[in-house]
Length: 306
Image: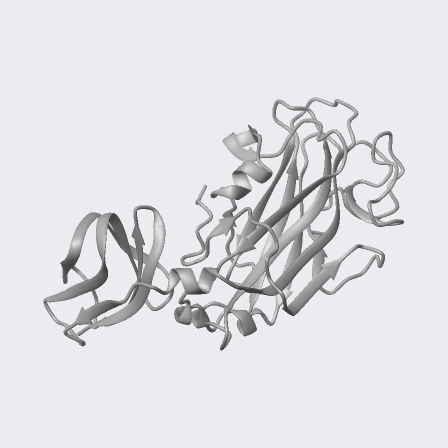
């Protein structure tokens, strides 16, 4: 399983501090058809359904009358691997940098109930930045504390057991300097999967309501995160490239990405305000870096090897 890092994305539990909203996707499932929700109908055993819940514990939606449920009437089936996707279209609007007077910060949130066998049955969430061609699990930072509480079949981090009523999960996505995200498709896809073993426990499963993706102005984060300036020289470079930082590094980490957003190198334990990167098997082209000083974001930028 991959960790949820999304290159320069950082998920964390925060309070809502923004004063303006620029983009909003809000699904309360009152319509049984929605352009941003897709249930995996290719899997004939898929148990996700949109409708009015009529089960033992799942007897009403949070925003009545409908929710999305692992079967609206019957207990979840055995040996299931059922999923649905929530797609945020036109996300390129938020992936090209900063607003002129602050940083744009998406928030991903939902309300849920869980009632499953706490041994191997439960639900987990993945994300895709290539329109669903490939997925990685969200298992990073605050989300683990917010949602995951165990592992299910295959050792997958997941939520399992009984949630004891409705729970709300909310995560802020802080975009820093992400100019190279233009290489990703103009959508972000979240996939919700529920999995069960061969033991029938007669439980209700997983119910989700009020699925949201909002874009707000993330004030303060922008100001705090742009205090450090890093100078890269020479540009372009051939054999090695130098970095000089206004901020003194203490056990810092430098992560290098290629122009497709793929991580190509991680350099750890950087100290001081000057260091060099040698060209070891770097192809000619543009590269991007993310610098973390003592585990907090410090700076980002790009350089060229030729």
